[in-house]
Length: 248
Image 1 (cartoon, helix red, strand yellow):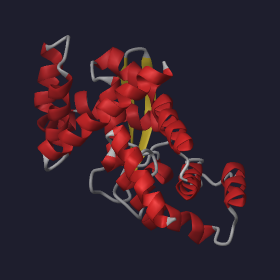
Image 2: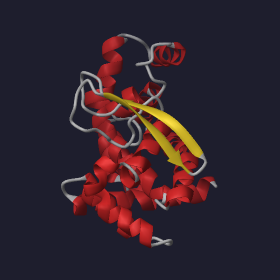
Image 3: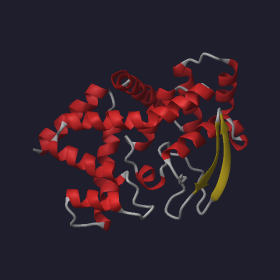
């Protein structure tokens, strides 16, 4: 049965061209997120866990825990329909805010979603679940809190950004806040000018952008190995484009 499950997941990964995403998801289910859930509610049934998560008022018990439980169950059942539903739902959830960012900044919506997939393992990384940090944003400081006034298009919003004691990754009040802050970080934050100056210059001088160029410029400032990182973001972008065609 285990061999069948492994072969099945490899098949799905190949079909979606997203080996990285499902490898990350699988590891995080087994080693990280699953341990957090079961450690707090050990002995609960699958349905019991869902009931607790959905009814909890504890801000740390984000409803995204359901994604973990759901994927754990999908793995057991080897249900390709459920996996496709989940990936489609993930893209659909991020599409409106990502399109808004694209319309007002030029950063392609599918690139934003693809990077979210790479950074969060399809939305089930610990920092996504506990901190709504779907894009792996942080600054290396603990016990850090500040507010940012975001002005993008018709959006005017004051966003709270903080780090908690267990990690230096930023904590956001919502996934939408994380994506808004991501756009602010790439294009407007003065403290990050030296990191993103090439991207900002390119976006400013080109009304119609080359998607691969944008991916590389983001990767150059986002990861220590930009070629490797850009490769996987491009791969996920193709996956996202295919899903968007199906859901729109």
